[in-house]
Image 1: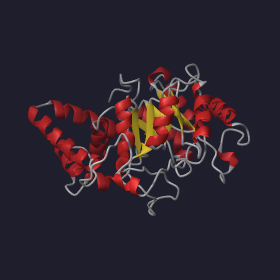
Image 2: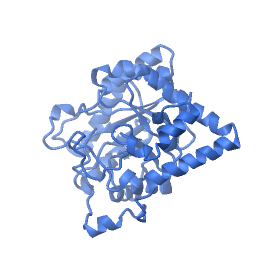
Image 3: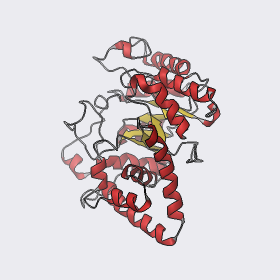
Image 4: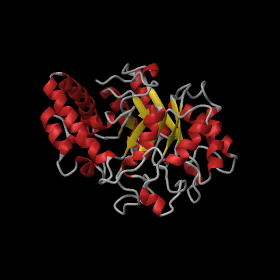
Length: 342
């Protein structure tokens, strides 16, 4: 079993994601905790999540002696209301001021999750205006450190991330973004799905690394795994060498990209839950067994970084966040309305 919580800002190595589990959420959360996961991600809004059922799964695991509350990292989100959505999906009065919405949402989350505190409260997406975004974030800050231990951001671009980080009193400790090569909507996915402005979210990842912010990628195993594998099938080949699936090889590679990376794993298969955690430990042991294995690992990581950190030979400054293509198009978007709730 991997270590449940790292020494890096108290953040986990891998997080069990509960999106789209719906009525199966409670048993799947309990199963994930039994398998060895100790970090759970959810959200108060009901579009893709069932936060109260997450709480039921956690309670069952604790009651069964699987874990204690102190061993867990529970992360939930405040989801800004989006025009046109059913107000009943949100755990607050959508007509009230934003600050009040945040307080009401967190109060609901504490009840749903059966806990006195939340380890990390994440702003699920930014508002169309930075002014509104900062109102929400400052309301989140007001809840620390008693009801909320730390803050995070999700579905955010570099310009907005930098602005919030530079003005925040309580700095965000994590950024949870979709990890994909797509920088425009892909018709094979659900409309409105968020996407980065730079392939593989390179600019945001680089800034997170520079500022000591953990990066939590999601969505990489559906629609992007073949792209990450590359023409050389690097994930598949490394996985065969160690004896793990290419999905597990992908998680291990993401963990080693630089800085602190906490991938989200959302499998509904109990066997894969166990296999994922065991496989990550297997890779760690295998790499440490010999210099030859270390050389193989380093060569594998060089190839993986070549896929996610290079842009077809075109150089850019990832921390400045503006490649030549974006400048040429005059593209200065923040994507506030496009970064939809998951």
